[in-house]
Image (cartoon, rainbow, N blue to C red; front, side, top):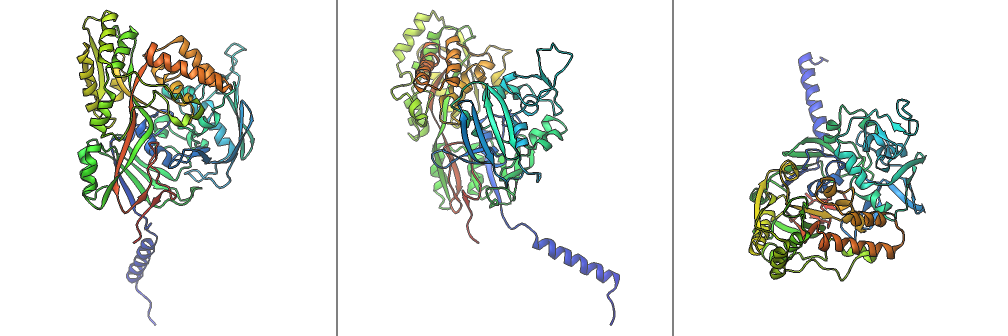
Amino acid sequence: MYGLSNKAMTVAACCFLSTLASAQVDPRPTLKIAVQQVATSGTLSPLREQSNVGSRSFPMFYSALIDLKRQGDLAPVPGLATAWKRIDERTVELKLRKDARFHNGDEVTADDVAFTFGPEYMFGGTQPLRAGGIATTIKTDNSKPPSVSVYKSSGPALPPEVPAIARRLWPSLEQVKVIDKYTVRFINAVPDVTMEGRIARSGSEIISKRAFLASKDWASWARSPVSAGPYKVKEFKPDNFLVLAAHDAYFGGKPPVREIRYQVVPEVSGRVNGLLSGEYDFVTDIPPDQIKTIEANPKYEAVGGPLLNHRLVVFDKNHPQLANPKIRLAMAHAIDRDAIVQSLWANRTSVPAGLQWEFYAGMFQKDWTVPKYDPQLAARLIRESGYKGESIPYRVLNNYYTNQVQTAQVMAENWRAVGLNIDMQMKENWQQIFDNTKPRGIRDWSNSAPFNDPVSSIVNQHGPNGQQQQMGEWSNVEFNTLSSLLETSTDMSNRQRAFRRMLEIAEREDPAYTVLHRNVVFYGKRKDIGWKWSPTFTMDFTAANLQLPKK
């Protein structure tokens, strides 16, 4: 018997390894999605990116303690926590599941939860004990007065936007206490009936303590975060694409696809053509006038509808022409909202009852309305204000929101028709929208309700810690006092009265914003893929919500 030559043995070995590698190739497909944007800040951190576009993909790689039934009534369901209970009006206790793993393979423990809500991740650097109400393990800095306790951070330094958002989401969180490896208690400094909602909302996702502390810097972390969602970040190039890879150890079941690729395609036509050519499986942000184009091809369909998000126009009352509330109220009365809904949205959405949603249940003000379309009243208010035709800037992005430019054009004409001199200014990004080196006037925005209480929307965005006041656009002393009452009172009657008064102030007496219509999202998709859209912005591609065609 003769042995094989070294060359033959090498060839045989290579063939065997090649066959073995082929057998190990993941047969699951890659899902390709065309989006108008992945993130506005160039990061994947919900403590920096509180945006509609971020909300689309973030739940696919982050996990929270409490999740939501996204395709149903948005009721709370177990996430990383299997159960939770109220200890008292300031305390919620949660039990963690024992089968959850981070993307780096580490087990999710109570220590990671406490760290997620501590100063290093939410506040960074050396921060006062009660900065924003957050407190965990404390070290005393002897160089400070004895009455001041500070925390020495060993993690990456945070950009200032992160603690600002953390204070907005958790204004009075005192401590997250570790009871044992799988039990934590959230302890608030004041009573809060919304704590469970805050735990479930974006910004409260749990991250790996070890991975965060090992990060080179915050930017590196924010572009490749480590959480426990169904997918993990594989590659991210801001303004270009995001690739997620399946996290097969996900506690909710093995994902049905190997990867998800979100490709930035800013133009609607590019997204629609890419879908119909087979380049993409899903496309987002489709205006109603493109639905017939998509559905003319029997292989594709359009799905979607109204969201828990309202489109707004926001006022900077520091602008000389907007200082008088009559001008702002006149602008609210000059907008023909029904015409916008009919002409641009084909009556597929509606004008809501101000900044609120029906799922607020007992807090919903059933008889409230937005300022009615009344050009004569608007013109009278303008005359009474003493306005003399000075220019009012209106900053607009190029369809960050679907139909944004068209909507802005309709409103600008509405305002000019009642005597206002509107200077519509097209901007490239949100940084230019918020730029305060030049006079700011009006801008577009939207407002979501992450959970079923007005604290999640009117206080979160327009209250003392909200972005509008943090940006220096608007403030009202009574409104801010009522915001505190809404956040701390457990008397539902008092809370209802406070909320109604806040609507009166912010929408009629000293307008901070005016609501336009309920926001809408339509997706184009392959008809042979089973998938349900959500009234949130989230595109859920978990095993429970994505059914691929059988080969």
